[in-house]
Length: 250
Image 1 (tube, rainbow, N blue to C red):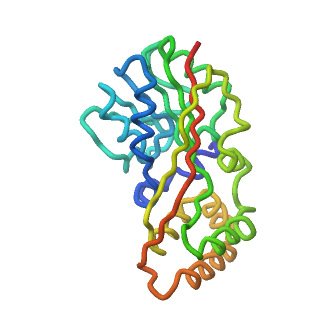
Image 2: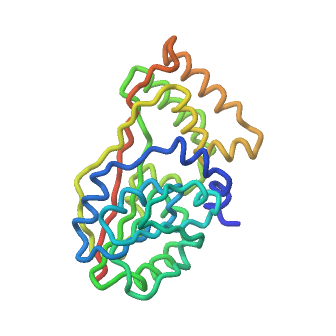
């Protein structure tokens, strides 16, 4: 079983509940770059956060994921359909696609095979965008505890592919004509249970559980709880920087 399936096969419900939504302007900007608006594909769609945002801009949107558990909990809309398939084996017809997006998943793919499929299914001058959101920060004094816990306690549990997320996909091969988008951010008000619920969707946390080495995460949670203040239901603003590697088929 590939790494993407190992990390996310059984996490659909928790993923849908705790993972942040993308900013609405991301879908609007990507749509604005497209010459046609008939069909968009969200590869590695998870529980459909970005799939849903694309649906108002296209006649049909397809969300694909290799995990049936993720698709089971994906958001629904009349013009969205979901398929369970690998990123490297897309079931769409040749040159049928106006936009192909991958959100927080491209670093798991066999990129050479995926890019060949992308070129096959995209129309001439079709758009492709790899989206990622990086390490979050709290707009609060508790941020120092969060960052220390992330980098010094639990970072060792991340798979090697995480480095691509942390540097905004800068080192990821991208053989398309680049298009630059303005910087974007995800901002959410989360209380302590919501933030720790999000942390427990990390592949790093799942690795620690599988290895029966959760002590570092438990210490991370305790320190964060102390720093939060007496009211754990009090929401704090959490911000994720969004990176978009976008391009056009030439």
